[in-house]
Image: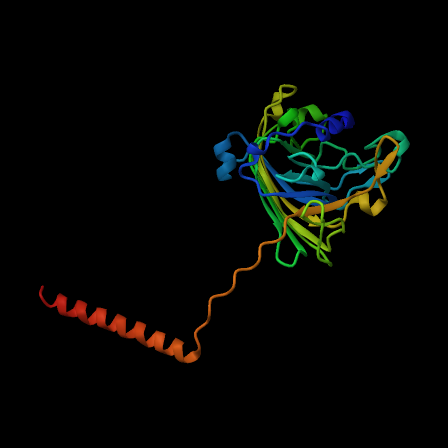
Amino acid sequence: MFDRTRFRTLLGATALTWAAWAQAVPLSVSFDNFTYSGTVTRYATLADAQNQTNPTGGPYTIQTATNGANSTLPNARDGQISVTSQAPSAYGSDLTYMSTPWYFTLVPASGNGWGNPNNTNDGFIQYYQESSPTVTGGWQPGHTQFRLTVSGGHGDDLDAGRLWPAPDSGAAAISRGAFADFHLDVTANFASPATLNGSTGWYETSAMPSSFSGTLRGIFLNDQPSNPTYNGYYRFNYTVTGPGSWAANNGATWSSGATSYGPSSEWAAPQAAALAAPAPVPGPGKIALLGLSLLLGVMAMRRSGMRLGRGF
């Protein structure tokens, strides 16, 4: 079982200053109703992992996991992202957090994560970054599509970096380390446009997206001392799909005090930049004249070259 106290500590961590987000655009996303699936391949060196040469194991594919009578979605794990950068205080602290949402449960009285089939080292990931990942995206024109990309290594603030030491499972301690590379690229589409929040000046929606897709890729360095046999570089290549998850499909929740929460979807960013006006397109006559002038120019250059060439 994963330490829920650690999870709460992560959520309550103090953010860095605005200067640390020099490569970030203003946006805020919190979404935990999707899945990721794919493979992990193990390498001895960073160069081999980067060049995808000389693997020492794999590729290993995420398999369906069970916990009692509960099963994950086929060959997938639930995922969650919380990304806030250069946002008004109403949207919370600056951070980038992507992980397996182990905290949902069908039995709240037994505690967060109880009986959750995603609450296993097998297929687990956790990236927590307060420093300076590159964050880009936001609303696209029309405010029905939201793009998000996060790039940057490390992801181990508060000793939080974790990745499945494929192909084994085991205790959480053997999955610790840091990300040598991390890249998340996702797109969410919505049935209705986001609306303007007059207090923040940002466009928001809390609706579930009608579709959510993208990729999650990177390289993880397992350097934990608990069991050095798992040390090495792990290259992961995942596909992200939503909406839909074990938690949402089964009505799972997590609790903070007396309040319980189900899967959520919150997206906010400033107004989308307007599309640039297209350049005027010449009419057929102008196109013909332009083509003729280019042709005559090329012919003149070729003739000039031929004349010059005769001197040899």
